[in-house]
Image (cartoon, rainbow, N blue to C red; front, side, top):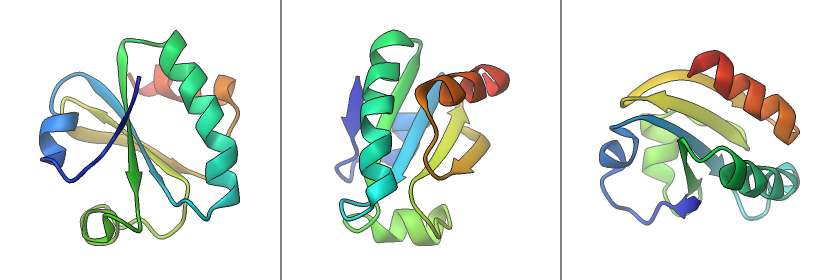
Length: 103
C-alpha cells in the first residue's frame, strides 16, 4: 500500500523496517510515470512500506531536511536510517532490485 504523507511525524513513518519514500510533484512528468510502477511494487513487495511526499505541500521536509533538488527522488530507509537514494524514473524491476540490494 502506498501511503500519502499528510504532515504526521515523518520519523515515525520510517522508524521500523524498510520504507521507500517517493518525493514527487504533481506537475512532474517522470513522477506521473513512476507512480504506477510503485503502486504495482507495493502490491507485490509487501515487506516494504511505501510513502509518497508531495514536495510542494511539504517543502520544509523535502528541501531543508532531505535536500531534495529534483523529482522524483526515492529514498530507502531501514529502521529510520537512510540507506540509499536515487533520482529519476526507473521501471519496477529496477526499483525492486535496488530495494533488494539495500534491504
